[in-house]
Image (cartoon, rainbow, N blue to C red; front, top):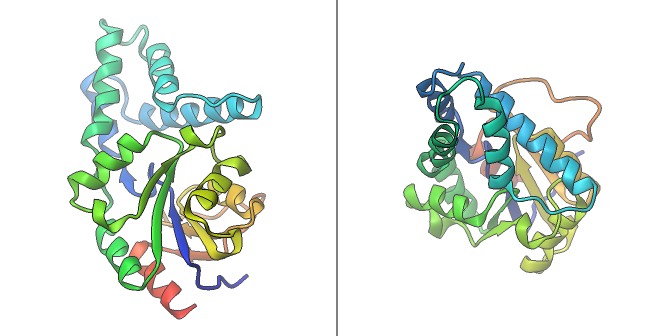
Length: 224
């Protein structure tokens, strides 16, 4: 399906904008295999989704801390300190190299740009602020104010309501296929940022557009 030029670009934050790879070093600092960082983050999403399905609006950081405590138990001497070492790593994360030029190209193309995260707006604010890119984003939105995590439809509806844009004039941009599936079901256009070059899962709604980075997204939308 071709993607029509939208009015609003809704960007996921964690992994789509932020480079989470430095968190691997935080695990290594504690003597824990770095690959456990990916396991932990996937578990965080899993439990957040489960709580959302059962009617809760979970706290991203709270789940992260709880799961880290369980994961680090038996591997580090001071579990609370280990949890803090990893969690404070979020405050030091940077953007992927393509993000700032991509955001600038989107704005120069006349598109409205907002973020929508399952985490707090403070994380997104710090991430973009450290890169001097806050002025390139119109709003920082969080599911904390939507009542449900993505991929529940209420999360995307919250962004649309706040921005005053109908679903068919918005596109959700993410590296996570589950996020794109949720946005598709909510009526938004979808774009998959395929930085890893992997294969998109066939059991989820296919994205309307696939790009390798945000500048490529801006270029594609200019031609839509």
